[in-house]
Image 1 (cartoon, rainbow, N blue to C red):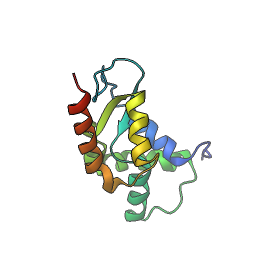
Image 2: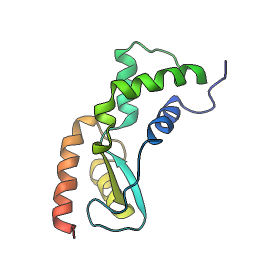
Image 3: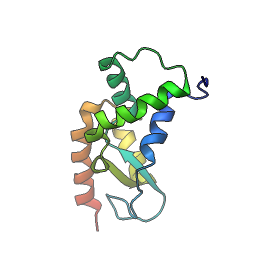
Image 4: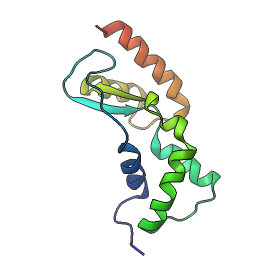
Length: 125
């Protein structure tokens, strides 16, 4: 058994991110520079809730997290879908987190999507 060298969520994120594609411009302003990915849903919060629901109490080996992450990705595929992933320029990504916080609850996802759409209407080209 291999001991974990990182937090379990890092293994989850790595697994999920392998399928994500950075789009070629900011969703809001169309900038092609300093692009970053923003997921509407917190993967940490989704995973914590999934662990509770599935009675996962301890994750202490690489083998354990590896066996769980695929099931998590399947069970949460709607929330993790690429439609909930936005490419933003660094400035708009920082602005989003300035308004909603670095970590926000997933119940705010619809509100944040609305904010993204309003900003796109204001600043879009």
